[in-house]
Each structure stands twice: as structure tokens, then as C-alpha cells.
Length: 277
Image 1 (cartoon, helix red, strand yellow):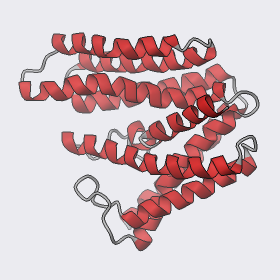
Image 2: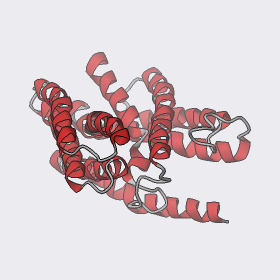
Image 3: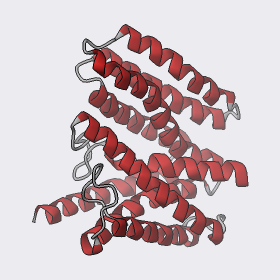
């Protein structure tokens, strides 16, 4: 009964949020989409550093700032055709993170390595992952930019949804029991199939500029890697002893819980555009 209730909440949340996102993508100005995803990046970083730097508001704020710096660098790097902006920000993150963590060294030295590692990995992971979601709007060009954003989101969302229902219906073999006990091989296969079907559907509905062969290949690769992105976030949560990264999205947990796979699929689609077009 609880599972059905949670599924309903997730559906209603998506029903309330998705139309607004689509309107912002297809009708709103590019800067509006940039600001929307920038807000998501800030919230996601706040959740991440809240898990790894509990009780340290300054370190948490520093992690949020570094994440947003990388995000803005990748956005303006593509908008102004200055890739050196993203490279500069990425190279600065380890330096600034090291200084921040030396300043905010925890009392328990056993936690220092995790804080230093996440302080570097987190901003690059979030800033590049969600920065790619935003940058697809620019790199895809008019009128296809919003279609590429939808395509990247479809890969992650349908992979997650397909895996959930396939796992509940047919799941028998555990995928990574130590990391996420409920995930199954059958669920993962269902997620790949669903996401690939969604990629083909996106080709016909919003992205006819993307060859159907490439849509299928990206669907398979993106959904598979998205599953690993989901598992990666699960490792992080289990290592710090939390179930959800936050509670800002009813039925879905936190922002990180909703975009963990997207932060893998979006860069894959962006790399495709950069190298293949």
C-alpha cells in the first residue's frame, strides 16, 4: 500500500513540474532555463555537502559556490565560445577545495579524506553534469536545443521508471545488493529497453535532427551509464548513512535523487554533439 501511495505522489509531482519545465525549455528565453538549472545545481550541492560536511555551514557554502562556478563556466564557455572558461574553473576546483578543506579541517581526522575528496569531486560532478543539461540548449542550436535537453532527460527518467516497474514485476537477480538491495538485473534491462524506446520516440516527436540510429545507440549507452550514476549516488548516501539526499521533491527525495542519472546522460549527449556534429 505504501509503495502505491509513493508511486502516486511521484506521478502527481511530475505532473505538476514537467509542464512548467517544458514551457521554460521550448518557449522561455535561454537565460531562464540557465537560471532554473543553476538553482537546481545550488540545491543539489547544498544536499551533497550537507551529507558530507554536516554542521559546517561555511564548508557547505563553499561547496555550493564551487559547484555553481563550474556550472556557470560550462554555460558561458559554450555561449561565448570560450571553452577555456570551463577548463579554468575545473582546474581551480582542486586548488580552492584543498584550501577550503585545510581551513575547515574536521575534528575527527578519519573524516578528512572524505571531505577533501568530495570537495573536489562534488563541484565537478554537479557543475559539469547539470551544466551539460543547461548547455544542451545552446549547443543543440535553434530550433533543436530544447529537443536535446528533453532527449537527455528522457534517457534518465525513463530508465529509472522502466527499471522500477520491471524490477517490481520481474526482478529476481540482484544487481548490486550491497549498494542498493532493491535494484535487480531484470529491472536494469527493463530500464534500458524503456529508455531506448523513449529515445526513438523523442526522435519522432521533438528531435528529428538526430538520426534514429544515433538515438538508439545513445539510448542504450546513456541508460546503461545512467544506471551507474544512480548506483554511484547510492554508494554516497549509504556511506554517510542517509536514505534520501533531501526532501524537496515530494515522492522523489532530494534534487540529487532525481538527477543522479541525468548528470551522466546529459554529458554523454553533449559529448555526442561536440564530437559528431
